[in-house]
Length: 230
Image 1: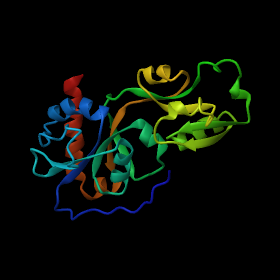
Image 2 (image 1 turned 135 degrees about the vertical axis):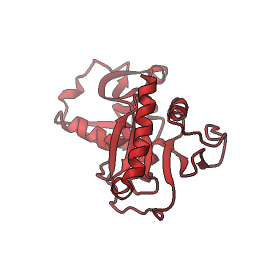
Image 3 (image 1 turned 180 degrees about the vertical axis):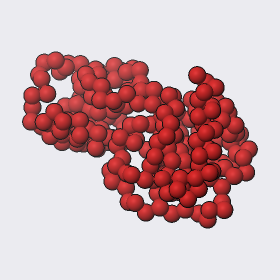
């Protein structure tokens, strides 16, 4: 998905905004933030909290809690100056507005191709000219299959990809896999790993140019936190 190049920043006298993903990664990230000396408001990790923007112990830093895919959007458009998102999100979006200086080594999983156990190995779809793929990663899927000379007919779903093969929507799915238990529970098997994924610290390139000292100092805090956990 291409992103517009326009960025919209608040006045440079305002503090930095850090965009963080809801869900599993946020739980892994909480102790990492503490090592970086960043302590958000107490309800930050409460998934039932309706608040989306939180102050921190640093008066010059607020955090916003958004959906994982939206972190890159907030940072690319300049609504947030820095963020944390999975490499899968960076692979899916096509933008030169984001710089990813650090691999945080958390949120380990993979983007994989999976199909029904009942059909796996019975036909070699790799020899086909086209294939129906259910996924929330249309760009990753198209690039992956195009590299094999296959046209991916993408069924774009935001969830419940595992249902698509059994209900005739697609032959295979491309999805994020951590343990594989959800695939197994729905009669699917992982047949190919497209990419291994970890979470990255990302920075808006315009912010890096206009506020280099602040952004560099922020990146250094995260780098120090990584060294503490090594």
